[in-house]
Amino acid sequence: MEVDQRLGGIDVLVANAGISIRKPFLEIAEQDWRRVLDVNLTGVFLCAQQAARRMVAQGGGVILMTASTNGLSGHPFYADYNASKAGVILLARTLALELAPTVRVNAVCPGYVLTPMQRAEYSDEMLASVNESIPLGRHAQPEEVAALFAFLASDDAAYTTGAVITIDGGETA
Image (cartoon, rainbow, N blue to C red; front, side, top):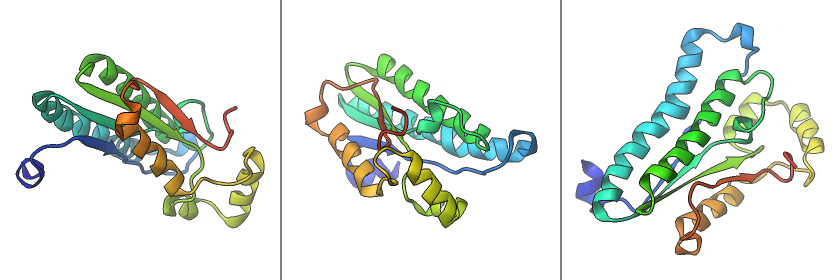
């Protein structure tokens, strides 16, 4: 594969797939359900499987998956997204067990992050309302979540596997 030819292997995979379609449960069309699950869960599975094969063969590596606080508790209008992110959490925990001690696998569960996807789905009023419900009073910046991924990919996290780490400004506390 191209990653093998260009890079000589893979040391860290960040499986950061995510789409959402904000609709009430009774209005989610089957094709929308499948699309969200295909991107958010099946895509993560396929990337992780390819990376893990290479990491096991080379004797080590780190797989990091982006889940969500939506995978930890229900949120209205996101049944498909919630289910997909809960699946990512258990996929990460299962892979951590199966691939240890060679490959470390962890899931990161961001809460509200001010991304283009978030801006597209929420009005300014909705964003302000959400910020009021977060103990730190704001959405995370993408760079703050990236810093957690960088730590988990590093040797400083060499004893961390199977973890599901929430980064949400205290929202789920």
